[in-house]
Length: 247
Image 1: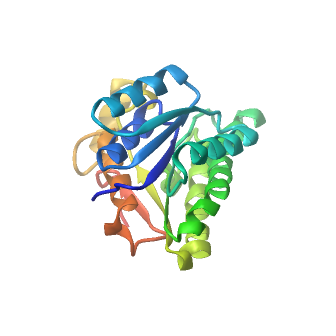
Image 2: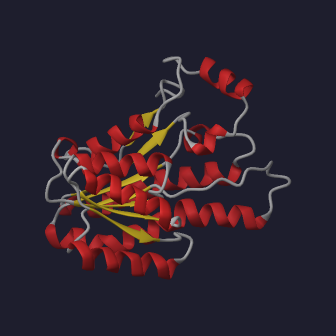
């Protein structure tokens, strides 16, 4: 699945799933623009990619800021000439039961997880239209499909991301641009590392494959959707959840 000649922008790339996606796309030959708030971690990631002969550049970005999204996309295009793969991965959680959830926590999660994907897509679409080729991949979540107590804001943002994926797929399909989502289940990341062992053991019992997923499991799905092998797939939600949710 060679991605040589393509340029990818990955948001939330400093750790976890975003970092794994950047490494996987780079290993497939893509030049990768990695964006996140943590400049130090981004620089480490760029060094790791370039040390193995890959191309990468770091772009500090807070996706909650519309102007930063616009300026970052312009900077990436100035650096690499185009963007033809976009991975909208940046996300946060602000968990609380809905009756106690603060409006600020609702707004920040929706802004970071959903609105930023709309804004980033809007900014890169021109580059994709010019070359009549593009891949937009949104990182959703199993909880956007089945809900989760205490995560009304997170679940709503990820469900919205799935709807956004399908709408964009219909809008740009005629220009050879695909838009798909990857919906991870229980994945071992810094976000899940803080959960108790009891919670994790209970979760694993509900997963038919009997294990927690890795960030590489998700990155492999992203690599596939970015490739020519997925050229006839669009508006699809690819579940990477070990069977936690089927159908």
